[in-house]
Length: 265
Image (cartoon, rainbow, N blue to C red):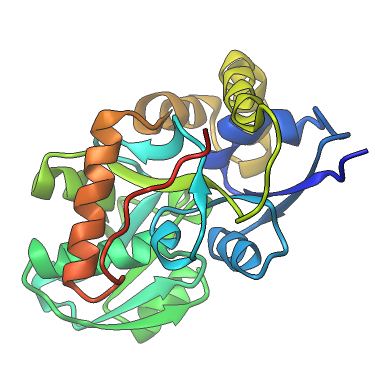
């Protein structure tokens, strides 16, 4: 009997449609799921502790030998609402940025955007995702995932990084991909993950109700976030945005020469 494949799932709302089957315990005879912040999923995959992981898109360029499950991602076409640069003063006066330590893709994205769109080269420092503490030691704070959905938008100034990326490039922003470790093989692997997304979208009413109760958000907010701001299909437009992101990340010394994605067939 084939050993179960270990699957690392990001413990944020934006991953739940993709990971729905695994969250519900489907195919428990084939997969063993665990839940982590996005940066930790990438670390575990790089260390050989996971077979498949939903990882920050930039880490596909940093971890050798990964293959990507086709057609699946966490992306945003316009505003994303859960990847924010939060600040109080004018953006032009930002000299130090606290980066959510759970982030990899967005940590690189904010550096690209501040350099290319605002001509800024601030100091960057990793920080625990606690907004008041971050702003006590920096002029701006990068928050991602569920903590970003709770930011008081009336109190703080906000840059939505997906919207900023769209304004800069005209392209969507891909934040995360399902990646498979070297040497991992399973017949029909992609089908299981594609079916998980279909099940998540088919169960959206239940997903929204559960998430709203857990996160103390309204069902309207949760549904709008999942329906209107996130996109889970990796198509040609998303791939074009990803290529542009990798080129700019390379230009700023955040990754080596970009490699073409290798897909699981």
